[in-house]
Image (cartoon, rainbow, N blue to C red; front, side, top):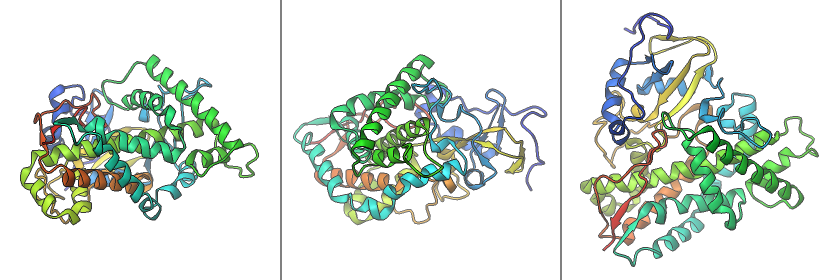
Amino acid sequence: MADPPDRIAGGNPTHPLFDPVDPAFRADPYPVYAQMRRMGPIADSRSGMWLISRHRDVAFVLRDRRIGHNDPRDYGADRIIGPDGRPLVSFIGLNPPEHTHIRALVSKVFTPTWVERLRPSIQVLVDELLDGVLGNTEADLVSALARPLPVTIICELLGIPARDRDSFQAWADVLVRGLDVGSRPSRQELGAAGRAASSYFLDLAEERRRHPRGDLLSSLAAANSSDNADADVLTDAELVGTSVLLLNAGYETTVNLIGNGILTLLRHPDQLAHVRDNPQSMPAVIEELLRYDAPVQLVPRAALEDVEVGGKLIAAGDRMLVFIGAANRDPEVFANADRMDVARRNNPHLSFAAGIHFCLGAPLARLEAQLAIGTLLRRAPKLALVTEHPRFRQNFVLRGPEQLRVRLT
C-alpha cells in the first residue's frame, strides 16, 4: 500500500544521499540511485525539489499532462540571455499549446523514415573519421569520433556553414554546462555565450529568409517572418532558443551515447564478443547501452496542479528532478538491472524520455550510434582501453567521458 499523501512543505522532509557535486557520485551514481528508489519520491530539504527515481514514477511524471514546466530555471533558461536581454525560449521548456506548435515545425525532419535517408551520408562520415585515426597506435575516440560525427550532422541539418562550427561548439559547451546540477558556469559566461549564439542565429535566419535553403533554419526563419500569415509565428526568442536547443540536443546526447557505449562494451569483454559475433544485433545493443548508462541522467519537471506521484501529494508549483538514470536500473522492471546484457529483450528504458516531450532526435541518435559503434568494432578488431577509468565530463546531467583513449593495434 502506498504511503499517505504528503506535501514537500509539511513535516520533516527526508534528506537523501544525493549530492550532485560529490566526485564519487558523479563517477558512479548508480549505488545512490538504488537507495533513492527504495525511498520512493523524496522531498529534498536542500533543493526544495522532489526527487523522482522509480521507473513507474518517472514514467508517470513524464507522461502525465498535469506535469510540465513552470519555472525559467528549468534547463538553465533564467541564465541564458539573448541579445534583447531576455531569457532564451525553447519548446523543450514549454507546455502545450506553445510546445506543440514549435515542435511541429521541426518534427518532420526527425521521423524514422526521413532519418533513414541519411544512413549513406552518415556511414561515409564515420568511415572518414575513422580513416583519420586507425593508422595510429592510440586515439581519443571522443575527439576523433564521438564528438565530430553528431556535430557535423546537426550543423548540416540546421544549415550552419562549416567555417562556423568551431565557434558553435564552444558556445554550446558553455550553454550545456548551464544545465548541470551543482556546478553551472557563471551568469556572465552563460550570458556571453547566449548573446553570441543568439546574434549569430538571428543574422543567419535573416539571410535564410532572403535566400531559403532546404535546412531547418530556413523553416524556422520562415515561421519567424513578418510575412508569415500564420498567427502563431515564432518570436525571435523562440527562434533562437529552438535553434540553440537543436544544436545542443542534436549532438550532446549522441556524443555521450557513443562515448558511454564504447566504454561500456570495452569494460564487458563477454558482451563485446557477443556484439562482434552478431553484428545484426546492433539496434538492440544500442537500446541496452542507452539503458545501462543513460547519456541524459535527469530532466526537470513541475506540477501544474496538485498531483499524486508514488503515494506522495505534490502540490501545484512544486518542482521535480526526474532521474532517468535511476529509472533505467529499476529491478522492478529490468531483470538483473545492474548487469549490462546486450541480448536483453524487454527493455522499456526512458533514456529519450516519454510523453509529449519524447526526444525528437531519438531516431537520428540511434542511427548515428549504430553506425559509429558498429563500424568501429568491425574496423578495429584489437580495440582496447588505455585506462579503465577515463575522466568524465564535469556535468552530471549529461553524463559521458571527457576523453576515451584506446589502443587500436
